[in-house]
Structure formats: structure tokens, C-alpha cells
Image: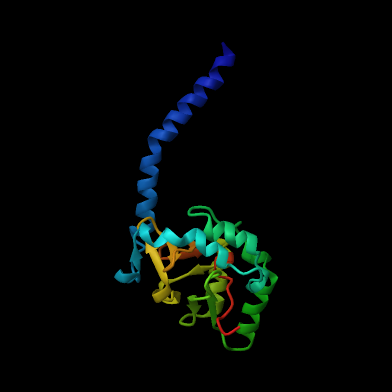
Length: 198
């Protein structure tokens, strides 16, 4: 009789999980856009059609990326994925990334621009707030964390579910708002392109 408890419990758990999944998705949608639309221009909101070229963009990701980000990881996360992310804390292990930000802060410039990994278009520029604030917030959350003022809106779009993409359809991350408003939690490998003049 004891041997039947586990399968029955598992079946009940699975039924409960699938019954509650739509509610969880609705809650997640509310979390992404419920209080996180502040600062997002209307023209930056997009529908699924923007994603039609996502896989093709994977062929444009160069072998050599900024901060020694791995090209294979960028292709998987940015061009073949819509919901997953790179490992949390990857930026903490990206020595060249941390080194560049520290040099910028030490040199007094305090500005960094991030380019998408496929077409090398600017997507984020930390220029209107202290770079130390950006770095502290990013390390705390485990991924680069941008605010609305950091976004280069002409090249970035936000889908209804909070997914953050380029205007061409490269996956970048998600809008995960907090008490300060929209917070764009972005995969470092997706914004590891070089400046176009390179």
C-alpha cells in the first residue's frame, strides 16, 4: 500500500501544477508590465512579428565577442531561445568586463555603451547615472541590470510578456520590474558586440 502513495502524490502534484500554470503565467505577465511600463516609450512596445528573423541573426554573431564572451553561448541564448538565460553571475566571472568598468570608473569617464552581439547596434548606454550604481545593481542581481534611462530605444523593443529584444529580433533578456520601476535584466553574451567602428 505504501508503494502507491508516491505515484498518486506525483500525479496530484502534476495535475495541480498544470492547473495553476496559466495563473502563474498571468501573474508573471502582471509582474513584468504591471508596474514596469514607466519610462518605456509606446513606440518601443512590439508584438511577436519582430522575432521573425531571430534564428537568422545567429549567423551574424561573430566568433570574437567583447569581454571574451563565448560566441556559441551567444548564439544559443540570443538567437535560439526566448525564455532561458545565461548562468546567473556570469558577469562576475567575466574578468574583462569588470576590468573595463573599473577602468572607466577610475578614469573618471564612467560611461559604457553596450552593442548587440549580432549587428553591433548600440542597445544600452550607461551615461545618465553613475556606473558604480549600474555595476552594484548588476552584481546584486547576477545579470547586467539596466534602467529605462540606459536604453537606446531606437534599437530595443519590449514584447507584451516583458521579453526584451532588438528591433531586429535578437533576444536580450526580460523586463523584471522592482520598486524603482522597469529593470531590464539582460544576458551579457547578447550585448557583447563591439562598437561598429572596430
